[in-house]
Amino acid sequence: MATHDKTIDRLQSLETLYRQGYRSDVSGRALDKRIALERAAARRDLADLQERLRAFEARYQMSSEAFYRRFHAGEPGDAMDVVEWSILYAMWESVRARLERLETDLA
Image 1 (cartoon, rainbow, N blue to C red):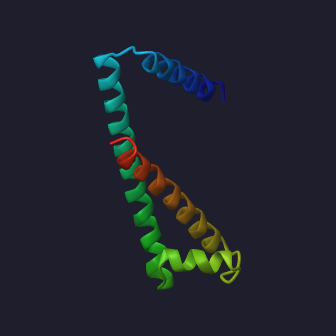
Image 2: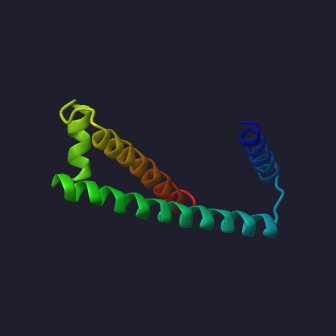
């Protein structure tokens, strides 16, 4: 957690400097590169999760979205496959939201 807090503190320090008028082409390029790397990682994660979800969809002849609705209604039970599928879908939604943010807010 200390590393996470330190990163946030450093980002906030840069934000403060920029709001006070400091400008740096180097910092701008570094941030652009970091965001591009994050986008690429999110796309890879999303593709991996989609592949894993497709295996469950083929096995159970149901979309992951439909399954997840049923799961939250308590229908499919709590077998290991069901729990794994639900976790993978929740992860997929999280990564999709992260990628959307990286592609729209930070474009």
